Length: 125
Image 1: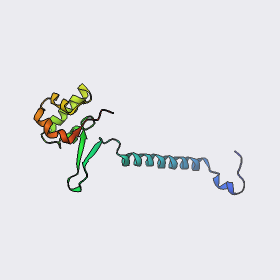
Image 2 (image 1 turned 180 degrees about the vertical axis):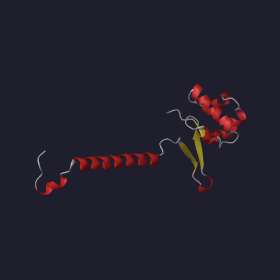
Image 3 (image 1 turned 120 degrees about the vertical axis):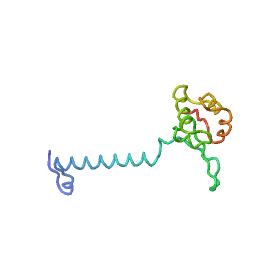
Image 4 (image 1 turned 45 degrees about the vertical axis):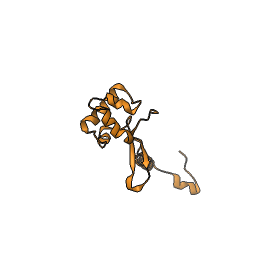
């Protein structure tokens, strides 16, 4: 390796310094990537704002992406029914309509009527 002359001499690193610089730059890039992915919340299910009145902000839950612990907030849906919805989705595939919830064990037409305005079905994903 030839020696650098003049002002470029500051860019001449030993093997240990090069390794340390590589490690620091890699750590910064990985940390920035992790921070970005956490800030984007890409793993959370999609929600849709129904009412913009700050006193009563309501969100709709996507039946095809929600986990059981998100579904338990719906009226008439407890932990067992929420788990049954997720299990049904895994076995039968994505929901095509909200009324398809009636096919889930323990959920009837009355329950579907109660939660119809609080859920939606996104077939894109």
